[in-house]
Figure 1 (cartoon, rainbow, N blue to C red):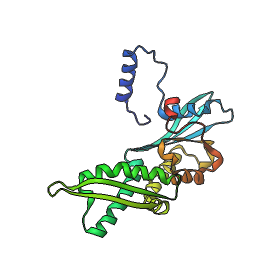
Figure 2: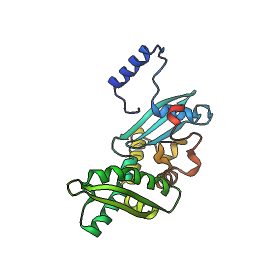
Figure 3: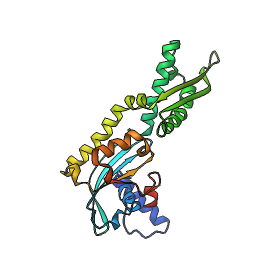
Figure 4: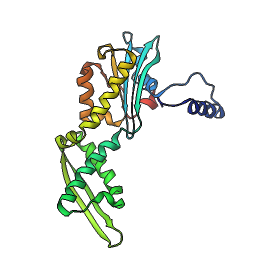
Length: 231
């Protein structure tokens, strides 16, 4: 991982040695993603920005390519900014609607929250392709003492979803600003933007990056879910 510390790197080396590997070099996830996109073979490439947004974290790194190797110039990460935070916005919408109707807060019911997470994620994925999506939770225990159960069946549209997630997008964009500032570069200095992580499939995330850097600089050669492993 980009943010791996000295102890973690040392343990990686130890594990590789115990497995019988000869260490050639330690490759970070941003470097691996660049190799998956075959950017080491692009003759005119100089700088690549890797935007890695997964389920729980977001990492942004600026790399310099020279003679087929990548050197990290700047990086920034947020350990609590990822797909789960987008999911939580959907859960909050459903919870607020239920509270408005009944006066009860389902966020206090652990069983309902456990089932709401996967339902919210499914709705988020569907909103990547459609304008509306259902959020369905069936037979969740609202109160273990009384045995009250609840079924939730709500609809959310993409506009409401994106409005609720606007602050998350602002925080994501700030990471890019911080990395470029750390490197002393303007966005025009970035030749390619590498997309890593399932969240880069979400339209509002992709649109933010395209508006920031331009569509022509988006590298889409590798599956964002597999890019690090392939690299």
